[in-house]
Amino acid sequence: MTRKVLFVDDEPNILQSIKRNLRKDFDVDTANGGEEALQKLASNGEYAIVVSDMRMPGMDGVEFLSKAKQQWPDTVRMMLTGNADQQTAVDAVNKGDVFRFLNKPCDAAALASAVTVGLRQYELITAEKHLLENTLRGSIKALADILALTNPELFGRTTRFKRRMAQIAEAMQLTNVWQFESAALLSQLGCVTLPADLVRRQSTGEQLSTEELAEFSAHANVGADLLKTIPRMEDVAQYIHYQGKNYDGTGFPADSVSGEKIPLGARLLKVVIDFDAAESSGLSVEDALQRLKQSPTKYDPDILAALEKAVNQASGLKVATVAINALTDAMVIAADILTFDNVLLIAKGQETTLSTRRHLQSYKANGQIGDTVSVLVPA
Image (cartoon, rainbow, N blue to C red; front, side):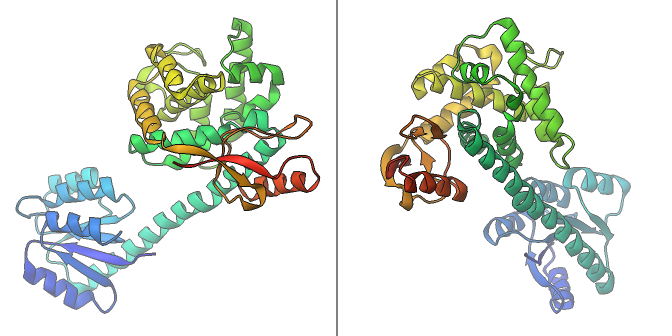
């Protein structure tokens, strides 16, 4: 965990004084103005704290801290200035999300105390992020993996949803991608309450009757209800709740929410799930994309554009045959893996994990499948 502190001021003498007073206790770096500070943030890795003067030529402290917040949101931001008017403080807090506002001149002891508190705040922020990334995400992935092994026809496609979701999120330069990926992995959780034939027909894009569509759409409420009681999963539950909602406000649930008022994660899910259904019906990637474009009122146009960009970028893959014992994590299965008795073990598009590899090795050892499988690799 970094403990670097960056001080930003247009007066070299002040920067030298700060560095001289604090360098024994902190990893201090300095920048002569906002532009140089942004360059250092970009090139030197994340800083735990940035402390900026307000009055600087070219780019003032509020503008600099606002830009720093956008690119490095975990970095704790402080302002040190002699201009202590109320509006400056308001702008600094509102635009730059400033953690501390210190009057200038600030003696070394007070500044050191503020930096110490700022480092504790940074540790809290990064600890929470670590918890999300390594505990909650790991638990979600393990649950999705188990579901995919127990019911590959139903849950095997959710790993395809996740991979496509990640591609679109990258194309749109979204943050908090873990929430969108989690929603993709758990989007079909409520389907355990539905008839298997109904789920199969919907997943391949077959036309459902009005009654069947209403019955199927109810799974989103079930899944959302299961998740919303879990801490940090409230947003994910909302994404799943609205996954069947069309951009024009039609669809499920039947309420007045439409357009950008539909949660972003739900709009992403709508595109990802419908695109996968089109592909599963036998359409090529290009034809599946065209099918979605023919119903523009159903989808967020920005997400459709990002999908097209993601599809084009991900097209450089080919199918390769790999021995089961040579499989590694995160390989993508290129075709459904069936036993000799025609039982589906792993669905096309699912990523390999330790549990899936052991699953396949067990069936291979028992003579129920062959020695190799097809996976996607870079062309």
